[in-house]
Length: 336
Image (cartoon, rainbow, N blue to C red; front, side, top):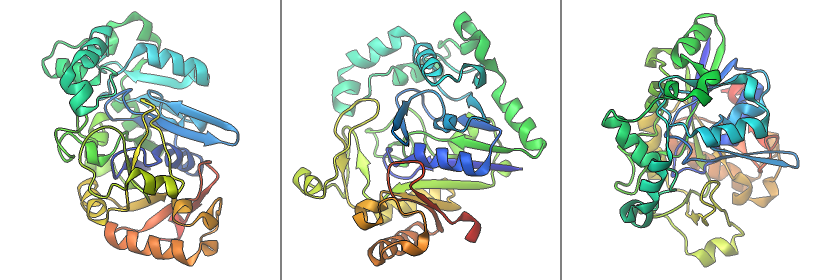
């Protein structure tokens, strides 16, 4: 039995999708189940000359032998789901917990028409905040209430726990990042629920005693989309000079770029119960590291950064991303 949670340690966009895809291929889970808010978060997975952006389907979809679940705590937009399962050709192995709350058109309209959400907070406009509010008020409709979702419906916690009972591996995928958690983030510039590892476990109906590893993903140069405090933010001209320009998967807004934040990394690791860490973007610390897959070939500059990051996090760095492709990764989990 192995149950691993993968979550983001900064403000989102840490490269969780790539890490999930790599771990899926390496660990061969029978189930990959996502938690988190809903389609307000996007994950990008690059394989060779193909780039995939997903908002509903778990980013571990690239591993063909896993069933893909959307956990009970997640909001589902049936239109986004239909588009993704057809585009990715995963209709036969994608499943939705029957208790998921559903985002309807009125939720999207409320989200986009709210000056507070749209302008002050910088919401993605995907309807998640209003849908979660309706869920709290017990007026949201559930997946089981929508005929178009009937073919996907399962009891996700029952399936996941049965797989663990049989000694199978399960991967639980988080979305967004610690810094925009409703509880622990830079309130009010946060998302509409918690994003920590404990929430991802709860979203999927997995008790804490069943979790074996929590991998927290950190970006060498943290990024943030939208409004809110960002203590290590660089001036745009500085990040441009470094050649770092990024755009959000969902909103396509340009991301704000910052320096490594050791204090935030340490606090995030503590709350998430980090057992192992992944660092992405090491090729931006030193471009000479681009595409390297052997730890012994990393430069002194990269190794010094990783040593500092590991000290800040308080857990071993066992996954190191050296480029955008799923193949651009160093995995030393077996050596720790």
